[in-house]
Length: 238
Image (tube, rainbow, N blue to C red; front, top):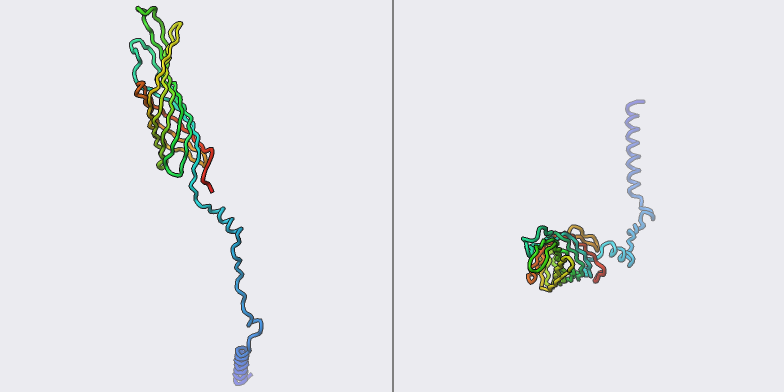
């Protein structure tokens, strides 16, 4: 094939291609291409969705409750024996236990009432013979009941406790063939500081140091106790 024929063939192909492109550009669009594109379907939220959302993200509520508590721990009593020269043994370590009920408000101050009991001390005293009669071994025991209304305040994990109430101080003596006891009912005050260790839903556990004093009976003691607290009735939850 000659060069002139090749050039002619190429020019003819180019002209045909340009003609096809121009024809395609001048062709009107079809009905399918002119049809509008439907907007995306958006389903409005239903009341069920709103209820489900409220369950997933509940609004915060201020809850009050009736709380019961139990306290138990060792105690150490202060002071000297009545007759130290006759007292070869004196045990100052006892046990303190308390049951209480409190109203936990939505604020940080809660009123409470607690009733406690503590066998504080015991010992033996050897009394010599004298004008009062033959000597012998005297057993002594010191117990205390506490009735304490007061307030607690929670700040972070710390729990401050103050109370002013009554104490029933009972001293018992046992001598060969005889039993004696004396009772005093003085005012008693309490001051305690606790640290919250566990706080899950309705249950709480504190470790607390508490000072109890009854100046009218000259009895004071210190206790280190575990305080278990739980809600039995709740108010205001929604």
